[in-house]
Image 1 (cartoon, helix red, strand yellow):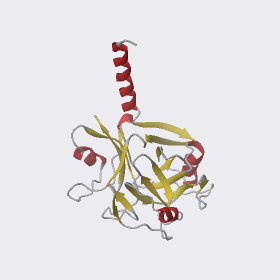
Image 2 (cartoon, rainbow, N blue to C red):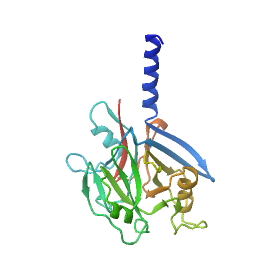
Image 3 (cartoon, rainbow, N blue to C red):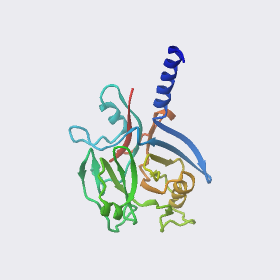
Image 4 (cartoon, rainbow, N blue to C red):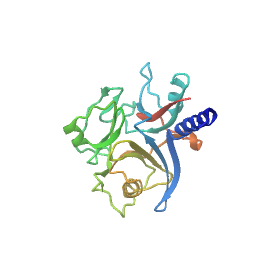
Length: 245
């Protein structure tokens, strides 16, 4: 191979690598519309965001983007769990190895307490959705973690409380992870769906053995490659991928 051809191959590989940092796409499944963003956790900088250096909640995707160092950009982001009125996370939250709040394992009101709930745990080269009692027993060392609920899929089975004939429909978003932990697949519905429909998307179409619900009413997505960055409610925890320009 000539030096010119080798250089071209390197450039093409670099472009392909950059383009595939986060893959977002729109899809229809069982009569509902979704946007899916898939992250290769083994190579990408997937992390959680809550507060800036002064302790103020970011609240918006644009605030995070503005505060990143020069040459870095937010290539994907999504709200990542429930929060109190002051935007403190409900349940366990870990950012850069520092924990805030505590793991909640008991039943309570609302979707968060619809057991089993779970934790989205990000480590150096993998990410996993882990049911909360299992998380408590195994105590994984997460660099970033956010607790939410309910679980959508637990070891390949839908949450036992999800009903096929449910009439409760809302916009919803969440995350599922591959069995080997290298893929995190984030989904947001673009029309109101039931928990059963949303969980079935992760189990049957995205083939993730474990998946976790993030929220409904405030569900939002930042996906620049789709020319999309949803405005709306101020958020608490946010999950995102940072790339170098």
